[in-house]
Length: 357
Image (cartoon, rainbow, N blue to C red):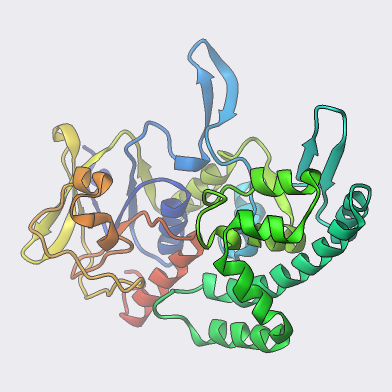
């Protein structure tokens, strides 16, 4: 194995979009970053690959198809993905259209007034309730988004202040927010709307949780994101997003190794020193010295080795301790949390004087 594929300041396990964003931020901060990925192609949920070997030019988005929450983050600007690395977004408006067998249709527009006009055709009451719900969700989005852009256990004060200002500004909606966020999505939809043409798309198009699960009503926050930031698709398929991230990563000296499934974390005493790949493919070791506390407040790994199969199966809940894990050697494991948390890792490194060589 090439030495550059064996050793790095940081080893990121998982080349999904979260792992690649974390890797790109760290590389831009001056660190030597290696990303290892089990699959043959990078991207994870944002892959765009051939549908079948017989049709290599017929590409499909394997999972994610649009940019929504991503548009609320500063990632595009901070990593210069559009400016320098060719990432292009195409706004979709309307992003959702409900079609009925009898030929009726209802479009969800980014502009609330246009959606209201369409709903009024089916129910004037529902049109008025759409405005009320939109106002409640807009207030909730303004409160919640600053806290989504920072560590949930060690939030940064500017984010807290922005959230508190939004609480004051939206104080008339607080009771409605609390009610809406604690009931099921099914209950929220049925309480607000009477016409099936309005209820159906709200039930079908927001699958964050099962729609009748307790506290699943918060999933309707997607409406707030959609109406404020809009929804886009990446030109060239969703895979254009990880491709741009990799160009950014490589431009700052990082690299990605695919078809490299991790068997276990390699321990040196009580610290994580790297990862061991399956099938005797060798070890990838980190080189940084200095204590890095997990930005997500998770305890550091204490086992001699942690098998990744156990993490995937849930045995021992190893994955609960592997979100940006750090000891005297830094190991970053792709987080199941929003991509913008990568900046928190860089800030921790800066505080420790580990910004690069």
